[in-house]
Amino acid sequence: MKLELNKLTKRFSAKTAVEDMNITINSGVYGLLGANGAGKTTLMRMICGVLAPSSGSITLNGADIAEMGEQYRDLLGYLPQNFGYYPDFTAEEFLLYVAALKGIPPRNAKLKANDLLQTVALSDVARKKIRTFSGGMKQRLGIAQSMLNDPRIVVLDEPTAGLDPKERVRFRNLISDLAKDKIIILSTHIVSDVEYIADQILVMKKGRLLMTGTVEELTSSMENCVWNCLVPAREADSWNDKYCISNLKHEGNHLELRIVSKERPLPDAVPVAPTLEDLYLYYFQDESPAKPLKGVSL
Amino acid sequence: MQSKQIMHTHQPGLHIRTKYIDFVIMQLRFIRAKVWAAHLMVVLVTVLATQNFLLFSTLNHLQVLGMVSALTPLLALASAKVLAGSFQHGVVELEVSTKYSLDKLLLARMGILGIVDAVFLTIMLSFLSHRFDPEFYVILLYLLVPFVMGLLGCLWIINHTRSRESGILLYIGLLMLTQITLSFQYDALYAASATGVWIFVLVVSFIGLIWEAHTMLASCRNRNVFNLIYS
Image (cartoon, rainbow over all chains, first blue to last red; front, top):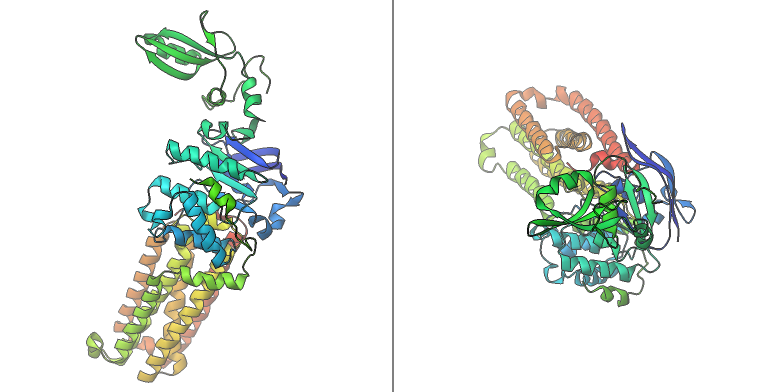
């Protein structure tokens, strides 16, 4: 299965939200990383057919998804960033409602809904109205509805928002189990959500694809560019102005800084293994165009 | 979450899909009971009016007819709230991405509510035509015109504004108040000589209603729902 984005662009009046995106997506888990306003949600909406592109196309196995229409949407499972629901519906009713929209016969829908409620640990509250749910419970319900039709393409926009750490780990396990023979695209600000499960990371900035690769490929580009060093606490602001600080820890009167920089910031700075979070923080520390680290190729 | 659970559930026929007609019928169960309750209430008031019950015993025939006629926008309100529900509760984005997309869902709802409204208007018409003098088709006009005007205004508000809930409530309230006031002040509104005006208003309102319904469905089909998302 192959999803191809060909010169995909989306403009809203004066603003270009997604610009000239070219990428081929095969089966596997894809993590879409980017700051607010990078264009992730717009891209996901176009992939799901919610928004029409301004130019370019999206094809599945060579066929334009706009022309496939209902046939394409039958393969799709989508969790929007702003997951809406009918507050008077119970969790079970809502899943049956979405199942009807997905064309699933009532008997199959009931079986599948019960399964999914159990999977996302909402069986006990299946008959309760959604408006009584916590944010995390609503999000779990949103994840469940995206899986109703056993989709071949799963698009999850910020799926772990509102989930506690234990639920996030369970969610990662769920995605890993489901990923076989499916395309799963999930966007997040939480790097650890994708770091361990994504086969490929797509980094977006200002509507463009900044870089793409496995976690190892992306982090290896920052080898010998991440340092640990100890500085006096009173110098915190000046170090923050000079370097990209990916972590800061107080050690008595000193600060242990984790700095991303091509040059060694201090003679006694110790090089450490880079993480995806270091890369993310470096490229999204401000809204100015990212300058590649000297000598680092993308 | 028990991820392995869903990997091993055997569900024969998992990839069978319903036909559109089955989808339409299934939508009946998702329209809330309060919608039907609102329809029943309007019919109940009609029955009470025709039996000279309580307040209605102090009014003349034309005033009673005017009062009942002014109630039909409530049917339009109940139906419009169902149509606005997707936009009101932010479910549009999800509904656009499913097999039976938002335009097919709205068409199903329009069809169901259209049939239900027709049935309830017919019930009202049968009670009123047995009780009051004007011809059958004249009473039908008195019921249809405020109903269609109510529905037209509600669809316009849903299509063109973001204040959907408050907008349609305010509009229907003003429409009903206006008609009740006119009914009590101008008997000529229900005179035979005014029938031509009622027919004209009905035709214009109906054309407007078809246009707004078409606009709603076309916006969904063209995937230009971005402006319709979130009230």
